Amino acid sequence: MKKVISLISSLALVISLSSCAIKEKPIINGVEYKYNDQFYADTADQLLTYIDDGDKDGVKSLLCNGLKNSDGIDADIQALIDGFEGDIIRTTEYEKDTVSASSSGKNYTSAFLSRSFYIITDKQKYGVYIAVCPIDEKHDDGEDLVGVYNISINTLDYESGDIECNTANTIEIADHNCCVASGYGDSSSYIVAQTGNKYEVIDIYRIINPQSIVKYNDITAWNSRDFLSFKEKFGAPYAESLDNDKEHVLADVYMYEISDSNKYAIVAVGRDDGSINALSVKDIDSRWSEDNKYEYILENE
Image 1: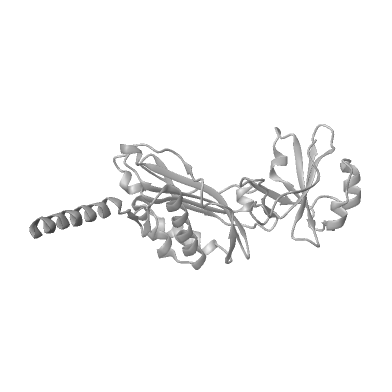
Image 2 (image 1 turned 180 degrees about the vertical axis):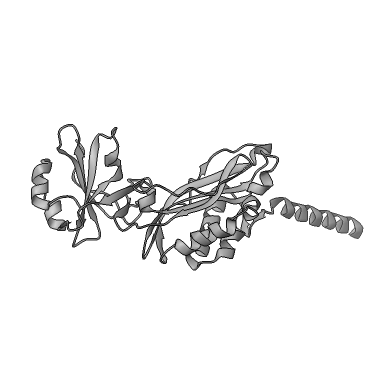
C-alpha cells in the first residue's frame, strides 16, 4: 500500500512539474512575456527608463538580434540618447490597445506590436513610435526580429511635418523595416493636447499667439456663437490644431490658455459659416477620466 501511495505521489510531482513547465512564460531580452499588451508596456517602460537614464547599453539590450548586429547601430543609439533632453514628466497612453500589424503563423503565435505616443520632459516634447515582436513563427528568419525592432523619437517640429524628418538607417528583417531613428529640434512652439472624451485622443497644437491669456470666469460666462465677437473679447487664439491645415475638416479648432486655471479653452469654428460650433474647457495635460471631462460652455448644435 505504501508503494502505491509513493507511486501516486511521484506521478503527482511529475505532473505538477510538467504543468509548471507548460505555464512557464518566455523571457525576451529580460522582459517576461505573458500577453501582448503586458509585454509591450513592460518593454516600453524599460526602454523609456534606459533612455531617461542615458543608458546606451540598456537600450541595445532590448533590441532584436537583427538590429543589435547591424552596421551603424551603435551610432544610431548614441544619437538617440545624446539628443534626448530632460527628465520624463509624463507620457500619453501606451500601456494598452497596442496595434497588432498581424497575428499569424503556427497556432497564431506570431505578433508584431506597435504604438505611437508622446513623451513630455521638463525640456522638450517628443513623438514616439515603438514596435515590438514577442514571437515570430511566420518567417524563417523570425528569431532575428524578436524584441524591439523599431524606435523613432522626434521633437514636435519634426513630428508635425513643419521640418522634414531625417533619413533613417533602415534594414529589412523578416519583411519588416527596422531601425533606431531620431530627429531632434525644438518643440517649444507646440502643445501635446490630450483631448479624448472616454477614449485616448491626442491632438498637436501649434502656438501662434504666445501673448494670448484669458480668465476662467470670462470664458465660462461666454454665451454667443459669434467667433468675431469672441476674438474681439479674447484676442487671437493662443494655438491652433494642426488639423486646421487639412482641407477635409469641417471645423477649425483653436485653443486659449487660461491664466488662473490648469485647463485650456478649446473652441471649434465651423468653416461654412465661421460660427462657434462648440466651446469647452479641459485639462489637456491629463488623460480622460471621470474627474477629467470636458466642461462645455457651448455644446455642438
